[in-house]
Each structure stands twice: as structure tokens, then as C-alpha cells.
Length: 320
Image (cartoon, rainbow, N blue to C red; front, side, top):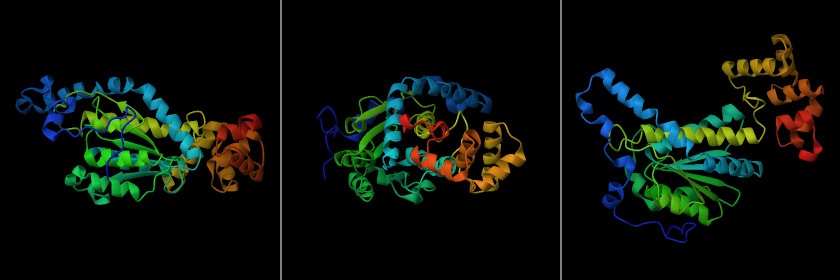
């Protein structure tokens, strides 16, 4: 199956790997780390730290594109769609980390935020990098998720040319999903098959080609922004508090209590009692206290606002 054309109408580049790699900034040598193997431990740490300091600036240049993806993800999740990450190697592991942290942090529904990784779950702990080169496996793995126009699919690849990721992203876009690329190089095949490209040009790595370093840090920052931004736009954050936290262990229960205490300026006993009467739901408890309503009314308001806590508190019908 052939990957679909990108927004410019071109098919993704089919140049050989050697030609592609030699033009990638993430594969070039870094002048700042020349003679790296002769350095002391402190010098090594200083060089890495200095290079890492460039990552946030590279991500900053991509903020307009990141913002567009944040809003698209929020719209899709509100409409019953999914956010599906696609990655390989370090990029896939970062995608898996972000997807796995959404349920405890924001109580996302099962399957709402997913990841697909070359080599499957076993590749999280063991290198199965050969799968990265298979377009067929990428198409097969995303086809099993049956992407639709409701979904957002984000392909991650530092190089922007990983065949598995490019083919899977192209397949999803051909079936109507909104496709975004997260990469660290300009003008890549992954960008060509996506609706939008988020490019963080972090430059050459301290150890040439080791994209688990600056490139991976940039991708982690970008995914943090996308999911945190989308969940905030959906109303799962009140002020700057994680009010949709899923209280499944003692740490998260304590966090829920403290969030309610801070948001409502109440004592611990009141917070604990309200959370209990709210069915262990921080959003319900918060609406009860802020709007001075009972549990059924708080639940009604949250359902009416699609879980947006601030709108539920204000009960502003015009905004629902």
C-alpha cells in the first residue's frame, strides 16, 4: 500500500537512507563536543548541559504550530475522538510515557490517548529497531486502530524519515484523521504526509546521531505541551490545579485533598468530607463547594459542560 501524498500534493521522498541522513542536522557532528572522549566527567556534564540549554529555544520557535495541535486535540477528544501517537525507538518510548500518564493525571477514558510503537510493547524495554524500517508494519499497526476523521494522529520521528512512522501517519491521514508531525529537521517525509509539522531544530547532538538526547528532550517538551494544553482547554484544570486527578493511590488521594483545600480555601476536614460526599470525585466536590450546590446538581452541571469545571461552576448556559 502506498503512502498518501502530503498537503503539497507530493509523495514522500524515496531517496536512499545514506543520502537522507547526510543532510539531517540531528546526524551531523557537533563542534562543541569535539574531543568528547578525552574530557573529564565534569567537562562532559558541562558540555551536555550547555547543549541541553538550547532545547527550549528550539521548541519556542514551534509554539504557533503546537498551539494549533493543542486546539485540534481538545476538539477531537471533546467530540469522542482519540489522540494516537506513533513512534519508534526513543520517540516511541516518549510517546508511550505521555499516553500512559494522561489517565492518572486527567482521568482520561480508556483508549482516549494511545500510542503505537514499532516493535510493540516489548520495544519499550528492549531495542527492536529493525521494525522502524517497515512501512508495512506501520500501516498494519495503525490500521488495527481504525483511525477516523474524529482522531488526531501524531507521528514522532527526530529524523522525520522513519519509514514505520511515515507510513502509519500517512495511512491515518488518508482515512480522515488529522495528522501532525513532531520532528527535529525541516523538509522531511513525515512533514509531507501530515497536515501540520511541529519542527524543533535542536541541531547536532553531543554524541553524533544520539537523538535520545536533545531531540528526545524536545519531543518530550512538545508532548507535555500538547496534552497539558488540550486537557486545560477541555476544563480539566482549574486555575493551575490538576482537578481531574484520578485518585487511585494514597499519593493521588492526598493530592486531591490538597487541591480542594487550595482551590476553596478550606480546612482538611472539610475537604475530606466533601470528597467523600462527592463520590471521591474532585471535580464534583469542587463544583459543590464553589457553586454551593448539592452533588446531583454538581454532577448535572459537569455533564452539561462536558466536564469543564470552570463552566460547571459558573453554569453559564450560553457557553455550553
